[in-house]
Amino acid sequence: MTDAELRELLELTDPAEQKTLFASAYAEKLRHTGPNVSLRGLIEISNICRKNCFYCGIRSGNRKLKRYRVGKEEIVASALWAYRHHYGSVVLQSGETVSEEFTAFIESAVREIMERSEGKLGITLCCGEQESRVYERWRKAGARRYLLRIETSDPEFYGKLHPADHNFQARVNCLRRLRELDYQVGSGVMIGLPGQTTDQLVRDLRFFEESDLDMIGMGPYIPHEDTPLGRGIEMTQEYRNGQLGKGLRMIACTRLLLKDVNIAATTALQALADDGRERGLLAGANVIMPNVTDLSYRRRYQLYADKPNLDENSEESRDDLIRRIHSIGETILWDQHGDSRHYFNRKQKEQKT
Ligand code: SAM
Ligand code: SF4
Image 1 (cartoon, helix red, strand yellow):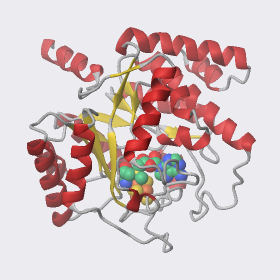
Image 2 (image 1 turned 30 degrees about the vertical axis):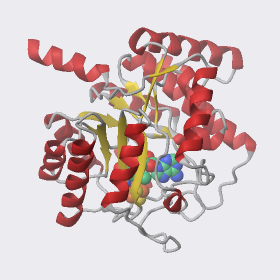
Image 3 (image 1 turned 90 degrees about the vertical axis):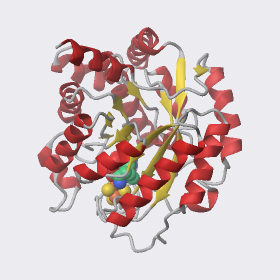
Image 4 (image 1 turned 45 degrees about the vertical axis):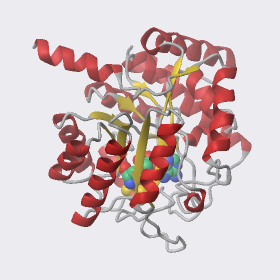
């Protein structure tokens, strides 16, 4: 597809044309992953963050927030809950902390989850930018996948979304290093950021392509009132619909372009519409990350307004999710890691060359 064609698809407004786009992306998904959904139990392990991204509710500058870090035993207990409920894999996500103490903490949590699940639970980490030796230790401990969104692939725009000491190139370097360390590498962007253009989204799609990513985790931007970027944006129904549409069209274009990667239908879609994640699946996504964090922490990990499932425990969310996924004719891949096919395809190619 040319840039002009991608631009046109990303800007579709006609409902019938959008339906056609989603249907062809869904058909592409069926060809590569079948009518299947992989689940990752999401554990929000800490809202302590050294960064101050202008869009994020848990940025260091948000003094209203009480900070927490879940203890190791509780993290392992949540992971084992996901394991017993056949989720197949978990994601440990947190604000960015860089210290030997944090490195060792994650390392030991990953080891213990591996041991106590007899190596059967796949572990993804999403703990920000770290030094290479840190990624290496976590990989050796048993983590298989790492998510690090580039947020936007336009360095100049990145500069407008972050304070001056947040470095676009450092993030790109982290993605490269993760790949060298044999992680399945995931990245993504926020969609519908104030000031973002369609050309920038096209460039994001090209960035995904050129980086040969294994997984894409992206979602609509949702304002948070205690952030510089979100202050004063009114969440009208029209705004919600607009953000949701942009997010879904971006998922569809990503599936059409990247074909065999894992694409998440992220929680931000559900924050905009009750059936947002199912609509994400029908637009080409194949992964859902149900929150399995203990309820006592969830209110303190609000990246944006209207975070869903704040009061619904993991058991209730699970039952609801199963019903919803089945209602659109998809099957859950229980007890499977749900690895990225793209990862194995690129490994095969690398071996041949
Ligand atoms: N701190 C790590 C990092 O930034 O890579 C991982 C956790 S961070 C909370 C995970 C993702 O949340 C970010 O990559 C960002 O894209 C997303 N996020 C933050 N604020 C958001 C907002 N207002 N709307 C939508 N997504 C947001
Ligand atoms: Fe911290 Fe990640 Fe939020 Fe940026 S997006 S403030 S790094 S938690």
